[in-house]
Image 1 (cartoon, rainbow, N blue to C red):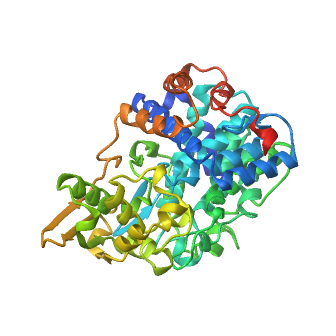
Image 2 (spheres, rainbow, N blue to C red; image 1 turned 60 degrees about the vertical axis):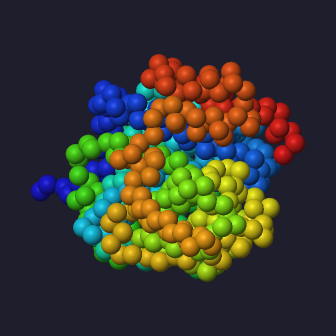
Length: 472
């Protein structure tokens, strides 16, 4: 009698089979671009209060000196480094995103680059080569999108969960790949992690103000995934049917609304090709209408004092996600980057939305609040399948009316950023902490990642505040 192969085992087989030789040249290049973009976002989030608190706790906990915390150079366990660096990357909400469309329903890919910090941390422990790190990254991206493609119906959020829960199932496989686990061990690792970790929807729900914990959703899942892989390596066991079994992911979390065939499809499509690299700091669903607003203000030289009203039309998802009343007057960074009202006001005031546009001074600026009160936001169901498409219409006190629709903002997979634009984005965040020489070393190392013998060398290049751990 033939034994039925479970979902975790099929995913383990998929994970163990991927090699660097399988990666086409464009996939290799895209992976390098996304590593650089992710490292830039980490530098951008280094000085945040959330980052400092996490590093302080890590220092108190201590641990083996096997991985490097970006910026401070704090040496700690691969688990702690994955947590600290992952939270830095997520802080600005500037790291990449991806999406899939199933039928008429658009699903955000969240931020697949969140697999990169834990890969670099565990990779440093294992002295992974650049090629091996890239294979793990490509695998992480593929698994991220696969988990989303399997969803049938409304999705995670409408059931009270957050999609970063996927990290509990993805990272044991990616970590297992790095550790050289066999299929049995990977299957156990997925069972251990998946049965013990999940993210509640309150961390990204309309009507709820965001907190620092938003930055730890995926990093916490990655922490659990790496730990599970390390346990499985020693013989620890977990439920093989954690995804499809009784009380597993499909039944307990998805309520049966899941297509396992899409998750386990053995075809390699390299989802990393379709990743969108953000050109502005904001939830990606807002990028269409925000790009339109910035373009109108620049092209017609519209002064904030001349604005009478701003009418924003966007997808229903965007209107719900970034237009609820609790986010209208944000009090912190975590909420501000998901407030279409605030972001539109800042786009008019500063004509850009970068790291410098988020501060208590900005949130409380009377002129910004005055502009916020002039913004109206409406959702249009026809834009849901075209996300992040959006329309901005600015009416001036002089009676002039300017209107623009943007379907593919800069950084969208159909309007990609060039290598130089990605480098510029990295430097715009890194220049506050690094000199030109160090930034140049990071850029050249990343674009020659396939020649690097030990990924730890790249991590060491990301230290720019050595000794600061003594002050944490």
